[in-house]
Amino acid sequence: MNIINALLVSLFASFSTCLGCVFLFVKIKSQNINKFITFSLSFSIAIMIGISIFDLLPSSIFIIINRYKIWSILLFSLLFLCSYYLIKYISNLLSKYENNLYKLGILSMVVLIMHNLPEGVITFISSYKDLNLGIKMAVAIALHNFPEGIAIAVPIYYATKSRKKAFLNTFLSGFSEFIGAILSYLFLARFVSVITLSLILTGVAFLMITLSIEQMLPKVLSYKENKFMNLGFILGFIIILISIII
Image (cartoon, rainbow, N blue to C red; front, top):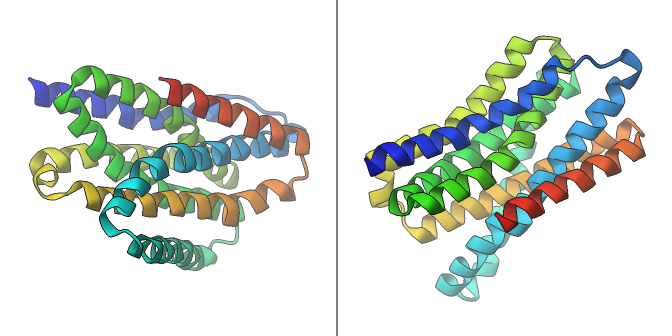
């Protein structure tokens, strides 16, 4: 029964990403589209940087430092460089797409899949050991999965005008979290150590920070809608604070 409950909790956290698609059904006037995209991307940037700085890195860095001591500096440097060049590499692979918004949406999906897989492992293990803790964690995850869904759905929709493409890509990202939970149940929980998970989460944090600053922020600034950019940042960090309190 614990296994079923843990999988259900993971499923809830997983599909909360798809809630980011609700904005696809909001009718936006043509003159307000740039403002809406600016707000949506700024909101997502705040969430991704906030998760990385206040959640993923604090929970992983001290474990790595405690294990590797002075060598952890080299590890962090390597992880950051790998993250930076991986974003560059994926971006170059997507260069065939002339529409920068579409490219940004696909890039966000790839990075968030990398984030959601280990998150699914953690959610499943936590829920299996303590269901109440798992539920609290799933609610906190759902709060930030929603804007992560926006980071995928909004750029892809406004680039392609296809709700189907936007939803499918968002669904893929969210479902990867449930895949992480299933893999954890099948075999990962027995083989993945705390230190391995910490290294993965640190790498994912660097990926999300790099994606936000290197790819998403320049796009936001190009619209020159500062008021909506600031509003998105503020609301995003409020959501992060709420998820931390929970």
